[in-house]
Length: 128
Image (tube, rainbow, N blue to C red; front, top):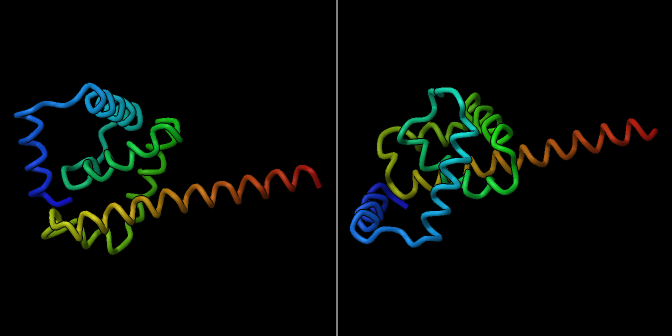
C-alpha cells in the first residue's frame, strides 16, 4: 500500500462510494480511534494516521479504546529506528508503509505477550 495506491483508492471511493458494510467498518474504526485519543497527540500526523487506522481496525474488537490509545502512545515514546527511517523521506513508498505496519503490529503483539506474562506472575504469586 503506497501513497499512490491510497490516492487511487481515495479517488475510487469519491467516485463510487462505499458499500454499507465498508462504510460501517470505516465509521466504527473512526469512532474507536476517537475514543482512543481524547487529547491532541503529536504523533497523529498524516504519515502515522493510516498505520494507526489499519492497526485500530484489527484491535477495536480486542481492546478497549483507552487501552489501545495507551499502547499506541507507548509505541511512539520509543519508536523503533526502522519505523523512524520509514517515516521520513519516501514515507509513501510501499516498502516504507509496510515497515511501519510491521513495526507497529509487532509492538502491539509483544505488548500483549508481556502483559500476559506479568499477569501470570501476579496470579502465581497470589496462589503461592
